[in-house]
Amino acid sequence: MEEENEQNDEGEVDSLETLTFEEARVLGSLIEKELTTPEYYPMSLNGLVNACNQKNNRLPRSELSEEEVGRTIEELRIKRLVHRVDLVGSRVPKFQHNAEKELDLIKAERALLSELLNRGPQTTGELNSRANRMFEFDGLSDVDETLREMEERQPALVGQMDPVPGKKERRWHHNFGPPPRVEELQDGSAVYVPAPDERLDHVEEMASEFKELKEEVEALRYQLRELSDQFKNFRKEFE
Image (cartoon, rainbow, N blue to C red; front, side):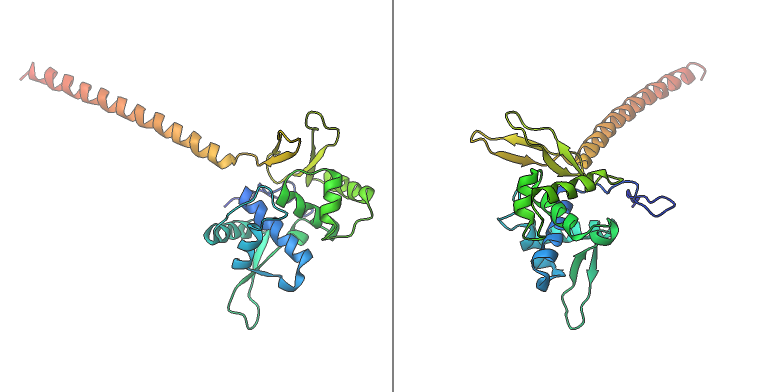
């Protein structure tokens, strides 16, 4: 598989990997558990499934199966963002993220990225209150400064969304995929809507092209049969 995070001659990453919703949830969960429950980290497949599907600190909520999480782990291993760990005396394989090394993230950045991967777009204030369980920031200014440093990196790890109608604050989002949408509910709250999976659009495009090709082949077959019949009739005139 062709890797998207190509490196230049100096070893710096030129572009970020594009993550699916499942990959973002698995990576975000691994980073979160590394920072909140290091005694249970690295994680087993079963533990990671439970972490991905937990009811708190996850938006939108998911019901990923063990098979889906296992398949997602393999995709993240190919992207060098997750690797398997075989501990001495344990028959169960464990998994841990490689974001600290692959993306050059300090602890504060990992805490913020985990929140964005697990909960979607959030304001600086929301990130300050939620990420503090993983890293103790020195208030809103510290969170904002860290986010802006992540935004100024090349490539940028995070970006900002325009305020929703009637609101002033901008929401931050991770850049490991197309910018998501934030829809306002009737009660004034906002809900995170993941961006569509670009691979589905590609599959639909391929299906459409295949259908057109099939129709062209059928048309050529019909023309060939007509030419064959005409040739046979032409030969009969000289027999």
